Amino acid sequence: MPELPEVETVRRGLEPAMTGARFIEVETRRPDLRFPLPPDFSKRLAGQAILSMGRRAKYLLADLSSGEVLVMHLGMTGRFLIMAPDGGVEEPGEFANEVKEDAKHDHVVFRLSNRFTITYNDVRRFGFMDLVPRAGLETSRHFKAMGIEPLGNELSGETITRLFAGKMAPLKAALLDQGLIAGLGNIYVCEALHRASLAPERAAGTLSDEQAERLSGVIREVLAEAVEAGGSTLKDYRHTDGSLGYFQHRFRVYDREGEACPTPDCRGTIERLVQSGRSTYWCRHCQK
DNA sequence: AATACCCCCTGAGTGC
DNA sequence: TGCACTCAGGGGGTAT
Image (cartoon, rainbow, N blue to C red; front, side, top):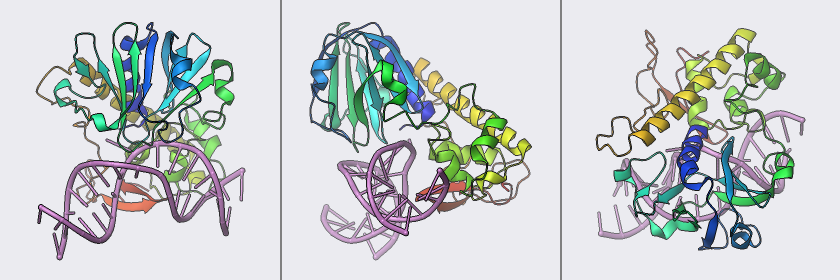
């Protein structure tokens, strides 16, 4: 499921269930996800309190009383199921009546002191978990080469101009490069380029100051709207009408090959092209 | 240093 | 109903 807005939605869902609680028991149903779980994983978590739930790019961070940080990445299909003491099951970002249980791919189970049970489920198992000392988090292998946070203060037109200076790589690739801006994925890169009227194949180093500024603005806008959509889903998850649903939230170009470009007065058609092995959706008529 | 490609894994969808 | 094939929102590793 995850791009940055989805990960932030998951963080917000986990926060009330996890912050302040302690791990009573951590059950691992296999020794690895994408990578082996860290040595003594369950033992290092047991008894620790969760001080706060954070996020960096697409990584979830549980700050522990032991001084370690539980680092979690959802890969392509990772999700958390939250079972309350009364037995009710929720999944951040999904409606309660749409939560699909699928025990075959339940890989890690957290049993907490507040009697909540949090289950990590991941069909494709591209997700992973790690334990890293808090003091060394920024220099740990996951974060040492990571780029700026797109919803943070660092993102601006000037920053984009500086990060992209001299780059011949296409804009699409530069925006997906987690070492430049961390947290943009395939969907939101397509959406941002379309909103900024910029062609995905254009060399990243060729943006004017004004275009870089526009790109910076639409990146914020696209991500913030998606976080907002996830948030409204959480609030409304008990409703049966799905109108505000998470993935009912539609994209302007992503997965819309052959449809009319949604830009007002544009007569173009959305095309699909493959860049670095991933699908790009765009309109050649209004993206230059 | 920058870029291109392949890989990890399972399931959904399509066409025959 | 089955089979073969393509594709999927991530990112790490290696080769060029």
